[in-house]
Image 1 (cartoon, rainbow, N blue to C red):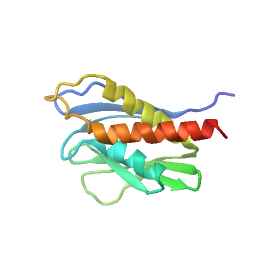
Image 2 (tube, rainbow, N blue to C red):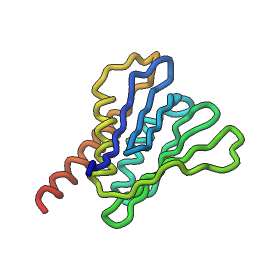
Image 3 (spheres, rainbow, N blue to C red):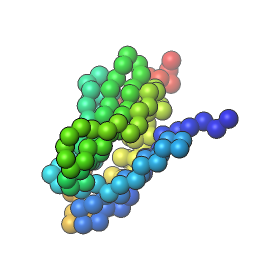
Image 4 (cartoon, rainbow, N blue to C red):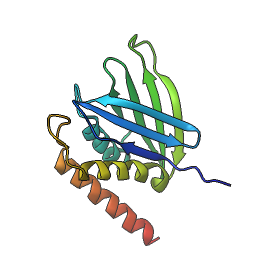
Length: 152
């Protein structure tokens, strides 16, 4: 039996557009997100930090004018990750995907995509610089949790 794993890839941004790919089993979502009006990578970093601390949060991936929403919720020691889509009519979000799991299966795949993205140099013309302080705080928080879980 094949174990399904969440995988996220953040591609090379170009002229304010970032290729995003997220897969889990048969679910395959690919889109290009805009950096207007806000950097969704910074939002994603903040969202992961918040949900780890127990604060429900979301990221809006701007498609101008439509968008995908990544919602994060913490339920005890588990995490819920939902993806929904809102079209330009702004009538109602359509739920596309939901995953419940632990830190390792939900948070770490997204965290790894962020770390890999930040490690790549980006021309500021193509994509705004990531908030380094927020990213460093996320890295510290994840290392702390991984250390705690390894000692259990």
